[in-house]
Length: 463
Ligand code: ARG
Image (cartoon, rainbow, N blue to C red):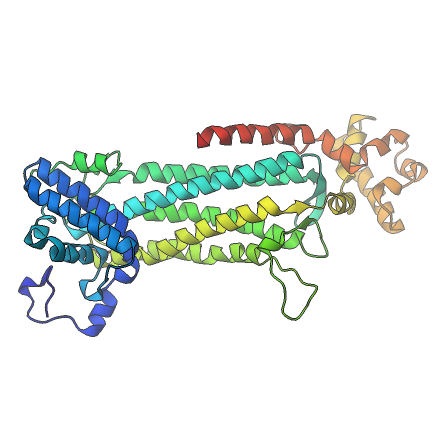
């Protein structure tokens, strides 16, 4: 049997393999809500412009509402023979209301229809991600304020570098997620134009009102070029690019959680709710949620790459290639949402172990820079000389197998006679972090101020 929607010139139905490769209903059924909202907006506009009668429009709207509830309560039968969500809905509409259903598609094509549906879906998803980023930032800012004075080792090359505070470390992630939020909002604002009414590619001869449908669907305005309207998928690429950066940031934090909760570090305690045990090793508590957040990055980057490759070199306007825009994007964006939720839960429950972190912060000669800075500040050595002197003292400590603050005054003075007892006042990790008061530095005063600034900012954003 040939297709009811477009089969006029077809004598034969499709090969089974054709149906297999052509049908998108298994995944684009996700767009049902957007598809029905778009159709309702379209037919109301058609009635206002006297392109269909008010009576037919009412029947169509009622029929669409029935379909919506059928899908939501699971009684709707999706058919692969009907290819996609658009034709599944329209065919059911015909069953429900008869020939008037055939008037819905006036002045419209599946090309502008799918572009509209997908934009609406991506817009909702971006709004969800925006809220989730806000929640995660809130959790991090609150934790940062609480642990503004807890010292931990700061690393470069994953080697002990200088002491920092746990709060400062968490606020670094707040900055990253704030940039992510900016990208999400930016993508949303560019996305928010309506393709509906571009029809197949050239516009339509019917006196439609594209501004009306745009407004009804919450778009800022109709897209100005019909070819662009049906062929553009930048909005999905931008959403996936923003998601990729979110995933990158999440994976870095996840990696740190994995390191921090290992027995060798023991910087943090992960709650039972976000860990698993081992079926053979009873002592184990594994950070599975963090590992999975780290790993989700693969499919999110994959979705971005996948779509960039699908779109590359496509001539204007619509090509069926573009049906391949959805499956990976759905997966990539919902994985991002899931990863954000898991990270927020993990971070809410995670408790730093201040004692271990502080002890680790003091090892590895992490206050050597403070010693050098003292030599510059007090006896007035040039920084390069101070660096050299400090290097010698560190060498001495290494040789003796002791920490920096355990090197005796006479040993230090043998290297540099200008050193006095006051030097010991800068060699503690607490003193070290307290002295880092430059703007953006790790001093607890700074951290507390920044944490409060973020909390205020976030309270504003949710209002
Ligand atoms: N299922 C199609 C898609 O997702 C809808 C558009 C089909 N348009 C067409 N001209 N065949 O792209």
